[in-house]
Length: 272
Image (cartoon, rainbow, N blue to C red; front, side):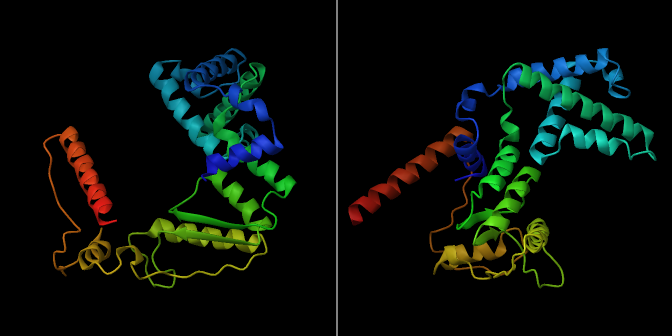
């Protein structure tokens, strides 16, 4: 299961089952965004971005920005409302307002064509799950995330509020340590999750795993786990689990890896 799969399941059960066939392609979304920009420009709604024109570079940058906004769960109404409070920075105020109006026009054009944007699936699914008590009586496990996007946090809020328990594995340093190390992002995510759990009325506990369970009894794998991305002066005895190779091309590297997989599968078959 992924967040995308979860969103599709919720939308199929609680939303519109036939919407899969109505998703706009990447090219269609770019065309609709161009139409939205032109519509706002002709209506005189743009005050900062109208100078940029409709060059391919400008539209590509605008499309990337829209993608990030949609994945963060930010709506056009929120942008337009937020721009009204940016009186100390008129340029930022105008730009935020422009983007909000373009996004609003883009959403309108999507609806006029009967198309859906898959980037808002998770946001819409979170709203449906909240009303349908989708996670009531469940225990949810989320494995090995470093951070979450805005729309994923919206779904997590629903999960934390409805589920009996939620277990999330994060790549993080010990939260009790005085200073965080290379996994600072994971520690920030942990602190955010604690706040969300408190808001949902849930108790938040954690267990820090300092033992490299995946390495088992292999000393060389343990040494790699302990020293990866860290300065480590200790060396482990060679046990044939770790190999450092260099290939002259990606094709040669892929051929070697495939040959090694085939060899290992053959050995396993003989052993069994």
